[in-house]
Image 1 (cartoon, rainbow over the protein chains, first blue to last red):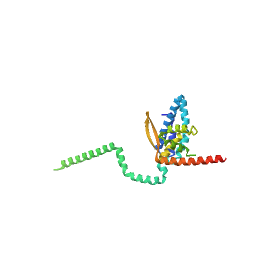
Image 2 (image 1 turned 180 degrees about the vertical axis):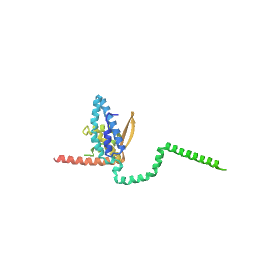
Image 3 (image 1 turned 45 degrees about the vertical axis):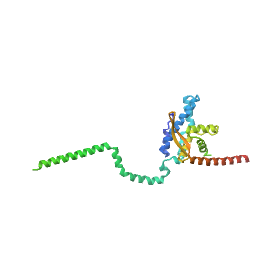
Image 4 (image 1 turned 120 degrees about the horizontal axis):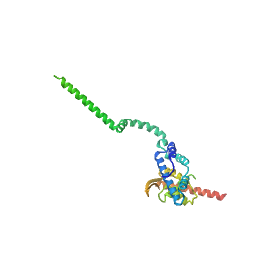
Length: 140
Length: 101
């Protein structure tokens, strides 16, 4: 791993609407590229700190690079490339997903729902048993 | 002139697949350091070309390091031929203009 902090660079790409897949991949490739640069410079006998500085310089200014990436619409999230389609698809997808909400909620809280169900069954069984005993004791 | 990096990348990848650092190093060698890019700049160009179908990529692990290798597609070869033709036309025009002056 190189010594470059790409967090600001990633935030800038995110702010520009670049798709997460391209953000992650660009950062990974730049990091590896910087590593390769440093390794090549150290092989030439350049001291470690100077190699890191030179690699950083040769990689280019990250702000300029973020601007160059942001200028490429094909790398943006689909809803930014086709905003009209997004305005139609998103509401329809939300309505279509509504019936699935209880399913997902149930999956995420399965143990709590199972305990609640078990309590319901036990309490109903207890109540039924109590009523039966009362009925049998009342009968002449 | 803005298509020069794209032309160089496609031309190099027409020979064999390469990863980013290898491409930058090859550009320096092949052009005799006449063309020197801010090295990080090739990645948006590569990703844009891949998005447009001119390149394809695959991850390879070599010596414990994972790298993304790019190679040319058939659509990329068509794009390369087109850019090469445009470059030769521009080059011819500039040469003619220089001769006149």
